[in-house]
Length: 182
Image (cartoon, rainbow, N blue to C red; front, side):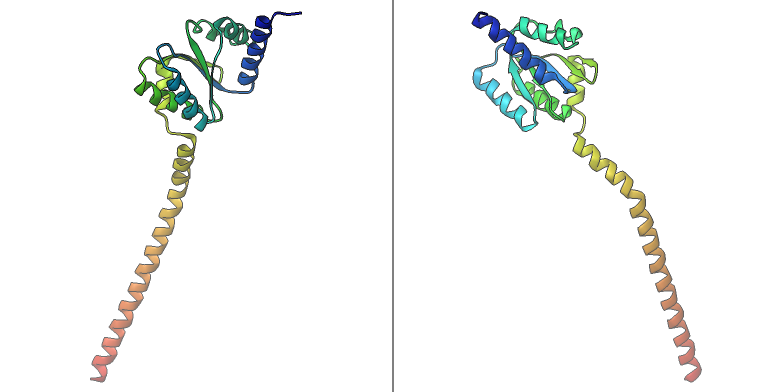
């Protein structure tokens, strides 16, 4: 029978693998110096952006990352580290981390992983400064809608000018009719 510690490590490793499976983005952060309420606040903030934060033993995290084919991230697992697994919105999760880091300078971005690319701290900050996916969709919709709006505006003004022109011709004809009758 296996020892409880070994069973716990195996369960932790499978939890990490399960969390990373199918996800395109995760971050490794160092949380040394943060209090338990700070970490709870971080978890709650990340939950709003559909991201998860968990702390695990470094040896377990290294083994799980190696077994998941993410050997390049393994070197960033040093000291008290946590893993933030982003949901559908990596930008939202990075924004939460960026804003949290502003208030808690002790937190450090160690590394990140986004669609087969390793991220450094500056990359994570750049990602946080991007507009969200919803904002980009809105900008795209406005860009696509703009030519149609301009076309409708031109047609409306052309029609308006035509009506004004017809009205002026009518007034001119009425004056000419009034001048001949008078």
